Every structure is written in C-alpha cells, then in structure tokens.
Amino acid sequence: MALQIYNTLTRSKEEFVPMEPGKVKMYVCGPTVYDYIHIGNARPMIFFDVVRTYLEQIGNEVNYVVNFTDVDDKLIRKAEQMGSTVPEVADTFIKAYYEDLEGLGIEKATVNPRVTENMDNIIAFIRELEEKGFAYEKGGDVFYRTNKFPDYGKLSHQKLDELQFGIRINVDERKENPEDFVLWKAAKPGEIYWSSPWGDGRPGWHIECSAMARRYLGDTIDIHGGGQDLQFPHHECEVAQSEALTGEPLARYWMHNGYIKINNEKMSKSLGNGILVKDLRKEFKKEAIRYFMLSTHYRNPLNFNAETMNQATNSVERIANAVSNLKHRLETVTPDGHGAVREELKQKLDGILSQYYDKMNDDFNTPDAITSVFEWVNETNSLLQQPVVNPEELKLMLSAFEQLNAVLRLYGGEDAVLLDEEVEQLIVERAQARKDKNWSRADEIRDQLAAQGIVLEDTAQGMRWRRK
Image (tube, rainbow, N blue to C red):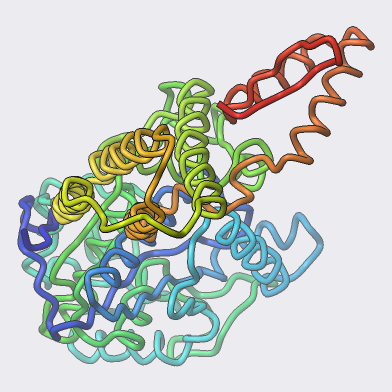
C-alpha cells in the first residue's frame, strides 16, 4: 500500500508522490518564541516529526523546515515586561524550545529559520507583490489586496464575500477592503524596526512563512503542515501571497492536526488551563507524552487529563519491560545448539511489521500502528515464557522492534526502565515514608513500582522485590 495523506486542500486522501522521487520538501509553522511552549504546541512538534521520520524510514530524504517567529507584538510586550530586548527574549525561549524538543524525543529540523534573519527576503517578497498590484501602502503600512486573488478561501473552503475576518486583525479604515491583511507594519515609537521602502517597521505575521518557505524550499513544496488553528487565516494568507507572486501552488499537500483540550475544556489563557511542556516533562517521561499524543489520530481532537496520562505511562512501561526482559534474556542465553529460526515466528513478525507499515501508510494512523507494537509485546512475552529460547529468535524479535520504534519512539532505552539500584533506593524511601506516616508518598512509590512491573514481597528477612 502506497502512502496516503489526507490533503486539507482537497478534503480527501491522496497518494503521496513527491515532486522529486526520494526527496521531500516539508515546511511546518513553528512557535512564536515569546514564552515557553505549551502542550498545544507540542502536538504538531511531535506529529510532524513522526511524519518526517516515517518518510525517511520508507526511503526519502526530507528537507524539513520549521520557522521561529522571533519578532511580533507578543515579543515586544514580553521584552517590556522583562526589561529586556526582543532579540534577548527570542534567544531565551528558542533555547528553551530546543530543550523541550530534546525532552520530547524530537529531532531538530533541517533548518530553523528566524524572521529577523530573513528580513531582506521578506521585504523583497512584499516589493514584488506591490509591483504585481497585489499590495498597497497606506500610512507606512502595506496591505494585501485579497479581492485581486480569485482563489482566496480555497484552502479553508470559504468564500471571500462570506468571510468573517476578525482573527488577529482589527478593522482599519485605511484598507480598501475589510478582508485585506497587513504585510508590513509601521513601527510605533520605541519599537524594534527595520528600514524598508515604506519606512521603518516590521513584517506582518503571514508574510514571514511565505518568504521563508520560498527561500529554503522553493516556489512549491511537497508538504505544508501546522495546527488546525492555522488553517485560517494564516495558511490561507500564505497561499494568497505565495501563489500571487509565483503563479505556482505553494504546497501540494496540506496537513493540519486537531486541537488539544484540557479535561474536556478548550485550552485558553482566560481559563488558565494551559500546561507548559517543561512542567509536563517533570511529571511524565517523554515516551508517555509521545504515547499520549500518538494514541489518537492526528486529525482528531485530543483530550488531556490525569487518567489518559496514567494510561500512557502504564502502556509505555509495559513496552519497556518487554524490551528490557528481551535484552536481558539475550545477554544470558547460551549461544549453542539453537538451530534455525522457526518459520512460524518469522511469519508472525512479518505480519506485525506489515500491519505497522499499512497503518502508517493510511494517513499516519499512529493509534493502529501502536496496536502493532503491542502485538509485538505479546509475542515477546510469550517467547520469553519458554524455558529454552533460541538467541537468533531473540535477535529477530529485537530487530523487528527497532523498526517499530524508530518513528514512534515509545521506548527510549534503558532509562525507560527502573534500574535495580533505583528500585532498591525507592524501596528504602518507601520504608522511611511509612515510618514517617507519609502514606501518600508510600502509596505513590508503590504505584510507581507496580507500574514498572515490580512486585514487592514481605519475607522473614525483610522486604524483597522481583520483576513480573
């Protein structure tokens, strides 16, 4: 089965065929770096990294670009609050972004361009739009003429005369039409600015991605991705800007991930229910966070709560225990007299891997791909129950898992399982907690050990433990 991708532009699944065989150009809108990233930012970060690494797994070279918006109103306000400068604020939170990236098991993009490093390209882009009659200047601001682009609304499937265009913009009497959007903003007194043909100022939000996608990937790219909230107006405006300038499609496939809710409520500042990734990582391992994000299809909404995260934690620990037990058995098994690998086992593993690839090829159906991982877990546990095992079969099992885990990354290595000395330390801590009548901590440690498959036993010689 060839890879099928749901294209937002056509509202249908289409076979993915890159413009150049074996090479994929992919652009995903990155964060505005005025604060730490939250759980809503993390979903596209994880999912589109999965897209990128799966495309590589099936034989493609991927040029993956994720931008940083490092100058806008939010950064200016943050700099004022911190008594700092816009570049310093951006540097602080870009560093934090990379820490979260690593903390979520995500590889860096091929390029992370910054708006401030692309100002000449952005200004040149706006100049070309102006020369073609798609842009006009009023009072130092430059606006885009939406009614000059007949396809405006084709991505979000809205008609220009029906649009309620109030997102991120205010009605400005200087506009020829209310739907026109800003390409260049005149600087206010004391604000950071760049010199341009229209006076000192800085870019509007939408133009930056059009300019950077063109610079780093060309006039047309294979995949453009981002959160569902970016479909309109941001991506719609990108289409209008880029295609008016080049006369070519901006992207051949558009992909958008769904929203995240917190305890069935929309995440918003007004509700104060946002969760920062840096805080989430203190409570949960990256494998559990990834499992949570990937256990629901990317186009569907995702609900975050304590129960789902505990389920995710238990699930990845079950995977980790199977891998750990397999590796331990492989280290201790005798190498002689094992014979050939059973054909039955080969067929089972081929079936599991075939199912994994089929599900990933079906518009990156990660929930069903994860089911393949658990089928592998069941086969592994069944094999390890045998008193005598063939080391070649153990190696084959491990090789199959490496394929399953290369993209999903639900197992992060030996640190995903408690080491023996860590178990001993926790048991000592639990005994002290019970002595201090700190029952909540004692119960917490007991639950943590149980989730890791650790069985505690009272003996005449004191507390003992074993792995299930």
